[in-house]
Image 1 (spheres, one colour):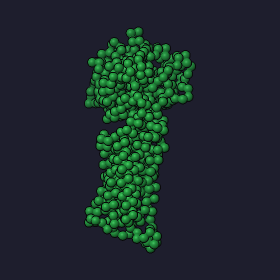
Image 2 (cartoon, rainbow, N blue to C red):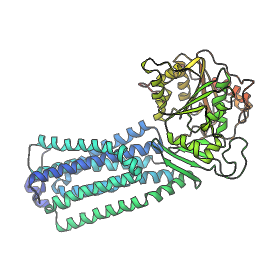
Image 3 (cartoon, rainbow, N blue to C red):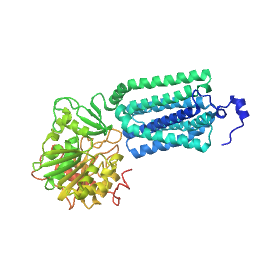
Image 4 (cartoon, rainbow, N blue to C red):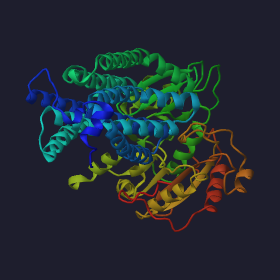
Length: 572
């Protein structure tokens, strides 16, 4: 860059700060160290804002790959814009940096609360996500040129050395911020308060640097203006901290209604339950009494509705157990105990192993009155053994070091929809290969494969991936109703259509998913039957299952590739 002549700057703006040594209240060496310390703090805060946007967007919208890509690409672009805009502030670097840090602290600190408000009261947060990514990126990008100017005014050095020192402090600060976000801020403060606290640290660091270390560069008017702005920002952030809890309660009521009675943040996800407190409420089939039915939300997405969950779990469990021996059963996921309830209705079951990632869900399945009544206290049955682990990692450990664990007659994969990026590995060729290794010779694997109507390509990719590990498959579906929560609840169902209507419909009507989709698999073509000694089905009929098998077969998408860890196919 070619700087304008000093005389031009002097005539227009007075003595240019960029050209004169700063008058500091401390020795130059210490002053330089303090500037680098502020660089460190600002870098840590900036990365926290970035991670907070990605995490909150993933929670509210889903699809972490897309949300991370949007946030990072927009923010990096905006940082370049901010760096260009900061060139005009270099002649008043101290005042400019103080104003930038105050604005960044306010925007970044309040971003989580604003995004959650948009989601709760307006039903979408994508536009706000892009807007905040752009604003925060511009402000972060403006920091480096201004800090470079300030550090050169403390003690002149060659440009290469100054850049090296500045970016070293910046990168180390980013490391600390990146580690502090998941291991300190989220566990101790949560998303909303964590962002507000980060903003307060950011404002304090910027204010101290400008108002104390570079105070001689400020006019009296500028000093009081920056002091007032920083105090106002800190007051607003403090008010935000005080109001964070009531704000979160109000937003939760806007999302879930006034019936939300359980809201806990486990180490894995947010768990919210509504309804299920009246006499008989949440008892599934044939329930009596008053009150709202129990609904279970995980990270804002409806996973269980007591009105219809029994249809889903009967369709998931009973075809697999009716096709042969079922003394030993493995459930991957299913920490709510509802699939286990259906499994235990078969008299021949001797043991059930449940591998569930979230111990908090299992705890609620055992202790919450509504959920434990809905699962008929299945998780307290002595035949049930619960393992708290990631299903993929647990399967991998079973075959490690030449181990040969006892095989299972049935493996039930009751996991989130494959469209949710975090669960993609649980629908991979590697995962199904390890699951197949756990099967007995005549064992069966049944998989919840997502909606075959609205996400047909994803559903048939699951089926192709199961076939790719050497298993024969029987795909089938069951009528449900459209999702009404952003992100696509996996198990929400509604009034079923008749078998006759189902038989003549290969694709769902417009407006959302009409089906749950499943895949039954075995080493030999599995029998898709209902055994004579099987328990009575209260939520669906054998005819519905048979029609669901023939109906979904007509909508097959041939030629799909199997999904692997390195080449996931569920990003549509």
